[in-house]
Amino acid sequence: MAVLPRLPDTPAVRAAERLRLALERRGIGARVYGGYGLALLTVGTMIVWCNGDRFWWCAGWDARRRCPVIGSQDTRAIEQAARRVEFHLARLREWRERRAPGRAQGQAS
Image (cartoon, rainbow, N blue to C red; front, top):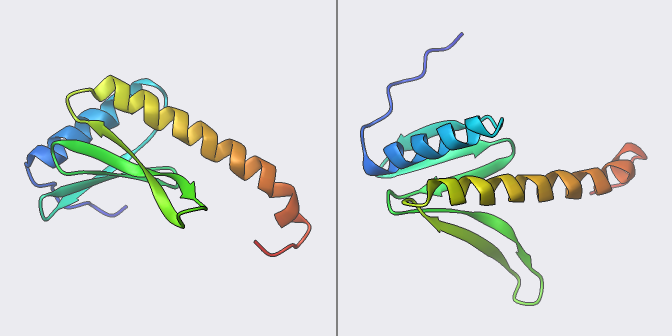
């Protein structure tokens, strides 16, 4: 088992750790990484960034504008951020389940 280096004590890492704990209380596992003044949480296949003031994540794709849709939440609203991340994870799972049969049949994705 690899030992992870100690995370820096920055506002971004502290906020990310608070979100990780809020997600854990909801039964959702996440891992925190930090450096260069930012923190990342990996939540399944989802990545949540944090700069200490805000969390943000890719919440979808705007086909008309051809750009990602970004979800964002103030770090002072940890429980709301956890609810929004949980909601988005459920949407991702549903999307994957709808696509799964095509992949099983050998179709390109």
